[in-house]
Image (cartoon, rainbow, N blue to C red; front, side):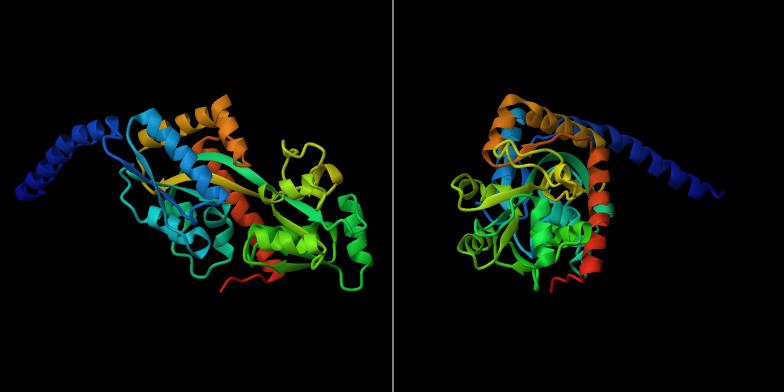
Length: 326
């Protein structure tokens, strides 16, 4: 090796060694300035409120502001893309949902980011299950009766959802595939419009996140047939899950914190431990429950597996039903 080359290598090695203590110290002192928490949906919705609640707790715990910033659009892709393209220094993270973190991979072409390669999973926050509810005039009191009624109907039954490609739409198609039901998904612009037309009888049923429907289910304006989670929803304890009724239908809107790829492990571990403590605490459970969310806890590795599993699951549904989002 030439002497000059050796000198350059030694110089680079020395520079790197000198920089490492500073880098380690910077991570040890994290956070020493405000942290941006990008929320990929418009203000006021359940996902936004959950994100703000978590950001508020982290601000109190770390003694630095975790500033919520809404970056809505493209089913959550715009906000999560901003996280993916940020510097991996711990000062920009995001709280995304199952849409941009898993489902959208099969719906949008092209996707601006690859969730598995461009993001660092940090912590699972919780989930909001969907509920299938029917207009009181529909002669079905169980999921089995609803499926049977759909098969007996000439044109099947209509089921409203919050929009093309939303989890309500995907879950309706999944129910058709799993139970052989004859269903016609009817997309609306949001949960409220989908719910209103189900109550009026313009459509037979509605399949949206449970939080939108609770008051009208409790007022008997809609009849809930099934919750699409592993366990019953606390606010509707008398409504069985689809699984209890023999249909393996699991469809939830889950929320999780992610950062850009390459986020230092020390920061990931710190945030994961604190968020898990919060979602498992009486205070955290009460706060998230009030927003209609079932709190959850997971390691970064478990969150990574969830993202991959959900992406593969809904990809099959999207392909089979030929769903596309323009």
